[in-house]
Length: 468
Ligand code: 5AD
Ligand code: SF4
Image (cartoon, rainbow, N blue to C red; front, top):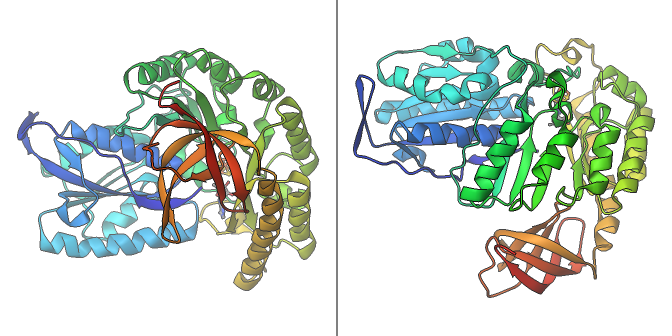
């Protein structure tokens, strides 16, 4: 799930000058560039909230900012290259005005020393496990500390935080587990995010209840690299957490991401059947349709196991839709192994997929494999996977026509010069709705009038309002 933008959230600063410790903090502005996954976007939001206490407000205009933070992603080489090029440009900002520049997140976690050496414009760098210390680090920078990095790990099996929200929407991301113990052979995440650590159910339930009561939250997405491992080290489980969250009156919809097929338990599948608030959608990354590739990826499951889990989920909740992640061109993938992935697309009937070319990540097991595949072969296989899925998706989405879905309206979108409202169903599909009413953050029942692989149109059946 990758996209890239500066954070939309805004934090408001309070006083003209704040005295903190030995320093004066006048009103200043921070600009944060976020790369990568929802976890990073969430971390950015946390940073904005902490920096608000140091009198920083958020700006989306880099030229206005006193502090530039790059919240980096290391999952594929492309993300790295983009960051290096953007950081290169920060040289001009540094020349033109008094500005501090920091690198945070996954690349900073593993490469902070090299970055500080190579880029004179970089003042400091910090890793993924000290995001909540951003206030102390910025204080150090303004106190005159130069060229420092902090990439320490919290080594415990659990952790404790309060979710920070700096936006006014009814949707919130809630971190429930961080890190990953899986060590899939292609993946850098266990090196950049560390070992799995969970929050407690009690803390999360109190946190969500508070946000629903005082901040108007109605939908939560429980976040983690492998949320299915949630609570394992503390004798708790994701299934239990969902059933506890379900009891919060004002909470209407619960999502979670991202999952590992090995850890989808029977108990969790049963919750998909009985929960009234869990979304009709599950993102279940498969990565490849070939058992031999899955073995080389160290994924710990077979395609047979994966399809059995899908069948059980669909039995528990016939309305559930499934999406996935696929990597095209894992080292030495044969044509036959590639064709197995196309066959899997037929068997699994995904609602949508995120697909990527394999990218070698230094330090991972796959990076040490001798690889005979060329860039052209990888590119061609990725295109084949995407086209094959689009044809399947087109048919699946056409079945929406004539059916009514409850959507939460998230905003407006303009296509071919026509502006419509854009709402998301419980099964995570976007539906476009024509209406002159202000529907922002309203729940609306919508009948789908037409649907292609990528976009659906609907007409209003009834507007339920912001709270119903
Ligand atoms: N190359 C390509 N894709 C990768 N992903 C993770 N590591 C790599 C890599 N080295 C993909 C996986 C994962 C998603 C978040 O990113 O599909 O599920
Ligand atoms: Fe990476 Fe595998 Fe962990 Fe997912 S489960 S974050 S792919 S190591």
